[in-house]
Length: 233
Image (cartoon, rainbow, N blue to C red; front, side, top):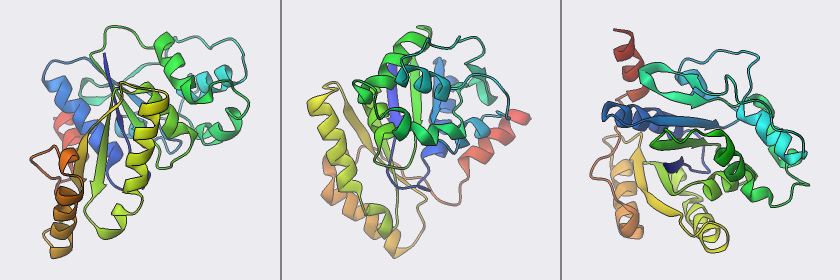
């Protein structure tokens, strides 16, 4: 199984939309895909049709692992979403992860250890929709991943912190997860403006080795909405 973290410390750059549509594309190719909602906002699960319930979430496993308690039952953990995409939801309580993990040994590796226990071997891909921060949740996702896909909105302020994001990935690779690689930068929410074009050129020049995709995502194309509409037909 290949684990891909879709990550950027900045919010609103299309991480969740990218995760959903990457999953849908892989499913259309016959791949077995599981998505993990690892953001307290829980947008991924909502995209995939999840409504509030009392079932177990990834947050319950984080809390149990951090508190050295018995792990919850995995029954009902994996939900079945639209377009044949399976997913594990989060909950708002995941925002307390910094506190929950403060006393945990090897706290950066908690998610990786959990996933090794709870994810069935039948899946080809695990996609992790990360929260927009540089904290312990993102570090856990990077430690658990094989690849990182970085959506970058093509506007000037979205470039703020990109260098820090790349540095964090390299630090995790050097110190904890040597198999971690950057799959590439994915320009998103692109407009037909000079400013947007300038950002793309800057990315091509400054991160030539990471600019791995031959396409950009145009702002006018709401891929997640199209996916849901097509599923309902």
